[in-house]
Length: 388
Image (cartoon, rainbow, N blue to C red; front, side):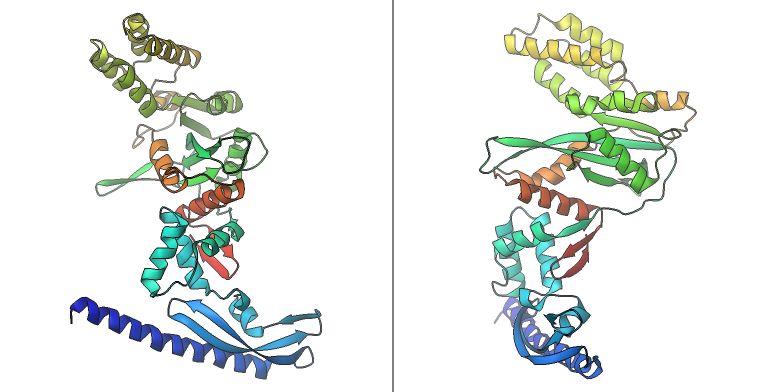
């Protein structure tokens, strides 16, 4: 016998014992509720056995079933008192664990397999887990304590394939909001970070501003916003929406990657990189413009011309936003270069892509669940309430 076998045997034994204890506790609570109930209102109909899938294994519980004379419905006082749905057959903690595994893992099937390995038997199918996420309601409001007058917004799109649709895919608009950076040892974290997925019919930047006002008590006449993103039209529309109180930057990760793809091995590559690193927008434009006609590939020439146009159309997009904030009287100490959007996309893409396609309801529910878990929002499930 190995240590692994001993550990497995003890774990299964404890599961069985605790499962029996859970059954006794639930039935004792049910007896107490029966004794203390309003007998004029709740008429005992019969006792019903439920099979509840739990982290301790399957637990059989005999509980009283009543007719509520006031509401004219049948009910279980045990279910109401402990805030779960016995008919569903899944304990709230098991459902919460399944949702976490589904959101943080790579697929519903993997979540079901991981749960089976943990509990020791197939307690929830991948389809049951999927339905739990679709039916879950996320409480999107969690008031934040405003830290200063500057809000940083990272915007990017996530292309997701669609099932059984006339369109092959759709771009999901994802926003990261924070109020700066703080150092914890060697690690740097975002202050007051929140995620937002655009799922309403209102224009994107109107939705973002409403989110800012509701969650952060943002004042559109006193506060400032710095937006970072690629040159997609829906992102650059922020310039018109926020006007003088907003500053837009082209995402430096995207620009640097595009320059690398166009100029790797080219004589001007190092010079262009240095100009970009030093926030010299005019210098970058000058080098890019003078390089037109030297790339020897027609497709690359078209891409270069498009890049030059994009930069020219958005004055200041490659300059340091901190200079702009200083001109407004804002202390920029501890402010860093923006560019967490790509990291944000990795968080969402890890779960939503990998070659799979989605129905609208499925991807919308999954994105809401990811946001809820990342932002520790309240999630109402069929079997209870959980926090991300």
